[in-house]
Amino acid sequence: MKKVIIYGVKNAGLRAWVRNYLSDKCEMIGVSDSHIDKDVLQGETFIHPFDIHLYPFDYIIILSEREQIQLEIRKRLIELNVEENKIIVPRLLLQKNTEFIPDLKKEIIDSINNNDNLDSVVMGLSYSLRGIDFKRLSLNALDFSWHGLDLYYNYKSLEVLSCKKDIRKIRTALLVFPFYYFNYDMSKSLYQFTTGQIFACRGFEDWHNAAHVPNQDIYEYLVCDKLFGDKFWKYKNWKKISEINESIMEGEGEIKLPGSWKHFYQETWKENEKIMQSILERLKNARILIIVPPIYADIIEKDEMKYFNKMQEKFLFSLKQFQSTFEFEIYDFSQKINDISCFYDYTHLNEKGRLKFTEIINGCL
Image (cartoon, rainbow, N blue to C red; front, side, top):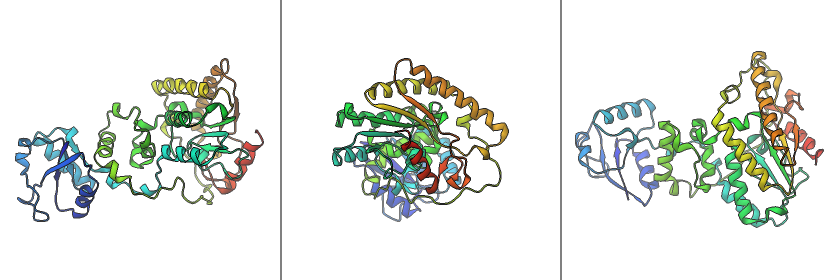
């Protein structure tokens, strides 16, 4: 039984959330605050800040939605000799748009159970999730795609499929991967936690490398999932994808590529190569098509294209090393669609581009 103390009692709304979502495996042993000497709201056991060290607790939960106040409370608690890894902001409860975050594992199992005729899989991230019209795709495919989903979690999805269905019956596999894909680990990306997108993987009960990342915010998200996750995720109305974006990207200005294109993370790359080998092994009886999705390269600054070209070269080189052992086809459609009216940002297609990309893929099948 984890014991927690709430620090800051004036935010009644956030306090109610903590109360409502706190796991049954946790016990709230009291409340604390620097500006009062008793709990007038609910009459909970009040612990003076100077006495916190006298109580056996696992975590102190900061009840504030404002970052500056969170920092001030954290600093004060550390001055009172509270270990930093015991100070938690209830970040999970402060997430926005969580109704759009599905349980991918459950979705996969439900899809398998409800469709006996599945003979194909699509793996990837938002470029396939939003870039393919699955109603027009000439395959009866199970879609593993999700925003920001990395190679590791695609493999975890494939493991679920293997447990629920004879994978030898899968005839076609579309692997829709960008050039930087071996350079990317979802579990090390703070952005994926702040957006909540990684929590779509909660059903796997495996946060991959997140526990080894020296980032306090990521650590707190993981703690919050243990403290609140069971109840927090239970009653949401999931939608895997919201309305299709029909807007057209603005043509003004140029962009710089993000860090995932510019820096080679050698450990991540090597690990992803091993994961890729495992994926190819599991799908060896299927026709495998590795598809690089479209990107609107004209908007990338010219000096930045050297990173694009180097990542392309490195990714394709890695793939070709596998072709001595595995049979698969590589289709580089990165610059196949060069019409700005098909994009709503430089890496994602809008509805018009979605239809065009689906037609291009159908032409390869």
